Length: 125
Image (cartoon, rainbow, N blue to C red):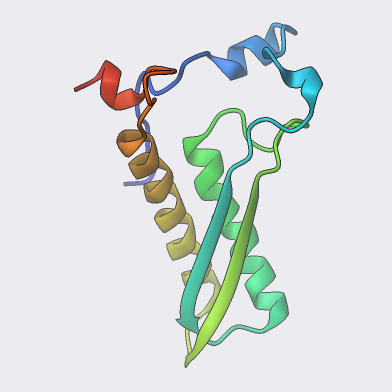
C-alpha cells in the first residue's frame, strides 16, 4: 500500500502537543524517543549509494511515526550491503522504505507494555 496507518497506536498525541507548544513530559532530560533502523541488502552498493538508500528508507519512519526527527529523537537508519547483485539504487531505496514502514507497524502491533503502559495489543486485542 502507498501509505500505512495504524489508528490509536499512541499513548499521547505527540504531534498535537508539539503544535500546541506543550512539548512532551520528560523532554527536558534529553533524547527520549529514538528509533533505529537497519536496512541490509544483497545488492552491491557503494558508500554513496548506501547513504542514499538509508536516506530513502527514512521515509518509512516518516510514514509511520509522528513526530519523527525532532530535537529529542535520535532517529537513524543504517544501510549495509553484503552482496554482489546489481540493482538500481532507487529500487533498493524504495524497497527499503516499504520494509522499514512495515517493520515499524509490526513492532507496534507486537510490543508489550509489560503492565507499565498500555501497548497497542492491550488496547486492541
